[in-house]
Each structure stands twice: as structure tokens, then as C-alpha cells.
Length: 401
Length: 231
Image (cartoon, rainbow over all chains, first blue to last red; front, side):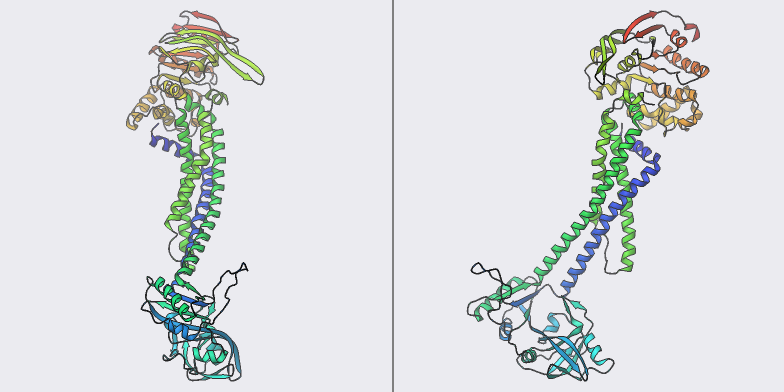
């Protein structure tokens, strides 16, 4: 029997059993759409997160004081700070061609007050470089003044929310606020930044690092952000940081260096794994649909025993019977998977129009994989009944009324 | 063209061996008209199925057109059925979702005949069996006689040499049955070997060679042109 005739014969069977076809196509479609949509959601999420990271610059190297080490069989202790990471340590990192900017950061919590209004806020002590390194934007005024970082100038830059809470509609620039027991003049306002890596930038006060050192009476930096000249020289910068710190800390390399690229890579990996896991769970629904195919094909073969017997009497070889039934299973799976893909396309368009973060189309590989898996499952589960049909004894089959 | 030697067929039903055929020897020549009669369970349908290569003998040898077919595999047997043997059943066995034309075309589909030639041959065949105006009807829209004519048209469209009919008139009233028999006999006179299994003594008598079976054995083999005047 020619392929075209086999296909037509199978199609006639599929069309003749309309309800049966409808249900199985529906089940297959739901499974396929599930795989595609969940993969799409996962991918969108991954892209959103990695984009967020990338906006901070993938050429960022973060230096943390302390280093986790295992010594003498004791359990590893994280952040055991042998020596402070000082401002001079930070400034020393500048001495490399690979380094573009360095921004030391001190962080601490303090009460910010203006008149009788006060609010607990996070203080970031840093330098003028922070603006560029963290890609911050100003809504008004100026950022910290450049110049010698050791000079403590009593000026500050307020986060958007904090400024609104303290000042309402009053003019902010040039006004004085109290941080703890010191007075600072507001010289700038941050634009709405939202959260970034766990810090609500709308709720911070940025002051010169020397001022925060005095405010907290602390020498050590919370961390140092080092911006590499480009993504390619990041390894050079890391080596440079480790060398410089070791040279300054009596040969001991007691800092932890994290690269933004590594963090990004880790998140990327985790989210990709999550996406695949979710898609895998959705694929289980495809297997369920496959069992439905099995069920339907078993019923179909049983109902059509007489017809199979007849085809054999008319001279159909067992292989022909097998092929016709397999084509039927493939056709059903294909119809189901096809409608599923169509459905997921519609759903994703509608969803994306409501939630702009869900950008892009469902990934093509997910659609392809779902289609392949659906048809594969159809064949896998259709084979058993088809083999049964091919082996059917024509005499027994024809004897039934 | 058909030579059966010592053919036996046993079935297992539970613990019991049922001997449907015992030691059957039979030679059938090209163009013969045979009837096969006997009580229910005498093995006549089993013999017909063995002759039609639908069923395998448990013992003995079978030569079909000079070729020993006893040990051929299923695919080879299917090919012989497709090219040289036609079946007509009591229950017609038309595929219910296919039209008359599509049903008649099935053997040509299996034989991989090109679509254009297929259409032509189906149209000729339908015309020859008086079914042209029923070409696009489903089996359920046909009368019993039309259904059996369609089934015969299907059985003979691949131009087989042997036509095997198992109670072809069993589901038809007397008059329609006679029409169907006339169709079969006309085909036989055209050179086809015709073997009819029947309960109906009138139909059985029409054959030029009459076999009678009992308990799986051939008990009578009468030759003689008793009913040629009916054709």
C-alpha cells in the first residue's frame, strides 16, 4: 500500500470517529501547550533576571573582605575577617590599566531626620565613581563630588522614596538632614531605581565614604566594586585585585572576589534548570495524553477487528496493517500537538499584552521539542495496539459479528 | 491448480483438541465450480479458509498453482491472497465508513495500483455490477443484495483466479440470493474457479462438483452438471 493511500486511509479513520478524535486532540493539545507555555514563562523569567544583572554591567568585579577557608578540620567559616579592607586598599586597586573605575562601599543603618520627621535608612558611603559603577541615575542636583576620598564633606544624595517621606513637596536640594548626630546638606536626588540585588535604592542615603567612616567609626569597607575596562579583561582584573591585596596584606590574600559574570552565569544556570524542570513536569501531561492515545488505539483496534480481518483477507500484509494503525496514531498526535502549538501561540500573545515582562515568543526549540515528544509518544503508545492488529488472526476476527 | 494432501487442522479449546479437518485430500482444477456442504461444525468453513490461505493447516501439504505454499510466511501468503484469491462473506464485511466505490477500491489500494487506473477500474467494475448509481453511498444506505454485489465487485476487482464464497446468500432473501448466485456463476463462466460453502441444498446442487463434509472429513465428491440450465 502506498504511503499516500495509507495516510488517506488513516485520515478517513480519524475523521470517521469525530468525538474520539476531538478528545484525544484536546488532551494532546493541552499537554503540548503546557510544555511550550511553561518553557516560555521560564525563559522569560530567566531573561528578565539576567537582563537585570546585565544592566549592572557584566564587567563588574566585587571584592569582599575575608575569605572562607578550611583550616585544621574546623568547619568552614564564611567572612572571617582577619584584616579590614580599607579605603586605601580600595584606592590601590585603581592602579591597573584593566581597571576603569573603583567604588568602595561602606554600608550601615542610621536614623535620618529632618525637623521632627525621622526614618531608619541605609547609608551607603562611597565615592563619585559609584554613580557610574552602579549605573545610577540622578533625578536632580549632583552626585558626590569627585576629589580626595579621604576628605569628609558633609553632603548626601537621597533615594527617591526617602526624599518624599522626609520632605513631601518641600524643596529638597540644599536642605539639611541629620544622619545620626551629624548634619549633611542634600546635594542630589536619585531617580526611581527600584530594587537592585536586594537593596532598595529608593530608600538609601549616599554620603562620601570618609563621612560614613566617621559616622560609623569604622575603617573597613563593606565591599569594593571594581569595574573592568571591558568584559574580556575581567580575569586580569581579578588577578590584579588578588595580587594588590596580597601585597598590601603582608602576603595574605584575605579577600573574596566575585565577578558579576560568574553571578550572572550561576543565575542563568539555575533558572535554565528550573525552566527545564517545569517543562519536564509539563511533559508528563504529554505522557498522560499518550496513554489516552494508547487507550483510544486499543479500543479502535478492538472495534475494528472485523475490518482488520477483512483487510487481511483482501491481501493486506501484516506490515501494511501495522503502518495504517501507526499512521492513525501519528496523525492524532500531530493534530493534537499542532493545535497545542497554535493555542500556546494565542495564549502567549494575549498574556504578553497584559504582562510586558513576558517578552518574546515561546522558544522555537520548545515548540519543536514538544511536537517531537508528542508525535514520539503517539508512536510509542500506538505501536502496541498496531502490532496487536497486525498479528490478529483473520479467521477469528471475521467470525465475529 | 489447488492440491491438498493430508491436510489436518486442529484447534485447542480449553484442554480439548478439536479436529476441524482430518486428512483431507483434494484437487481442484482451473475454472471448476464447487459447492461445499455439510452440517455445522463439519469443517467446511475451515477448509475454505485453508484453501484461501487465511488459515494454516496443522498438517499436510498444500500446493497452489504448482507452488508449495505450506511454509510461506504471512507476508507472502498475503501477496497471494491479494493477487489470486477473492473472498465473499455471508456478512458482506464492507467497511462502514467507506463509500461503495472506496470499498471496491481497497484491493487496488493494497496492490498499489496508480490512482488514475484505480478510478477507471472501479468505475468499470461498478458498472459491471450495476452499482454505478450507488458509487458514493455508504454501505448502510445499500440494500442487502447491493451490499453483496459490492462485496463481490471488491473480491474480483484485482482479477483473482479463485473466488471463495462462504454462505454468500445466507443473509439475503430468496430472490436477492438468486440474483447474487447468478452474478457469481457468470464470473465462473468467465473462467474463475468458484468455491461456495453453503447450507442451502438448492444452491449446492447448482455446482458442477459437489463436496460433502462431515466431522472434518470429505465424505462425498460428486461430479455432474446438474444445474447448468439455471445459468
